[in-house]
Length: 222
Ligand code: TMP
Image 1 (cartoon, helix red, strand yellow):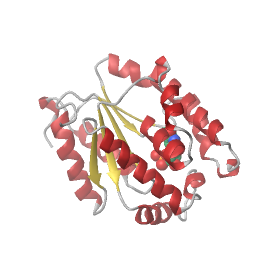
Image 2 (cartoon, helix red, strand yellow):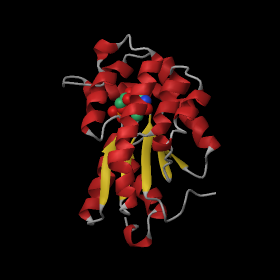
Image 3 (cartoon, protein in one colour):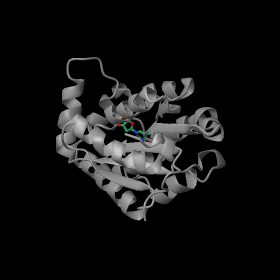
């Protein structure tokens, strides 16, 4: 089964740190902009002023003692705000929404990574505001050690706000990666797993190929 052909309006990008998904979502957004294709580019945690404040909290390396449940609820809180203020209004207006991470990240990081029960995370997302599913999810898959190397190179020398998760050991990132792959196996109609190795331009071409199949014809040309 292929994911929701030609009707995807809510598209999420997922993957472990260093998988290149943020670069790729930005490149896709530029590509659409050049073609004057209306869309919203947003991210989690973040996307709203409150979400950005939560982002600073959850990513602050000084908050290494944050408990797993506190962490989970903060991501969910940011998401509720984001869905209500940004994502749903955009989708209701018929706009295309590209989101850098969404609730699969909570299952992957807080669930598979940090060991919170998946049924608990699931139950939390039954709340009406949180019960929104992407039409299409691109999973950027890459070996965890290669990805971490990339993430560290990217961040070395500059100010960085994302150290808390990079401080986690390789095992953690491997659990996150296999969690993502497991979810992709369980929901083949929504996920497309992309090989995130190789040059940025090559991966971009892979993204365009997938997107062309899932947007209305008018928007499909690469
Ligand atoms: P980023 O790497 O996409 O900027 O995401 C920031 C960090 O937030 C990344 O380490 C993954 C983490 N995260 C979670 O742990 N749970 C979530 O639900 C989300 C959205 C992000």
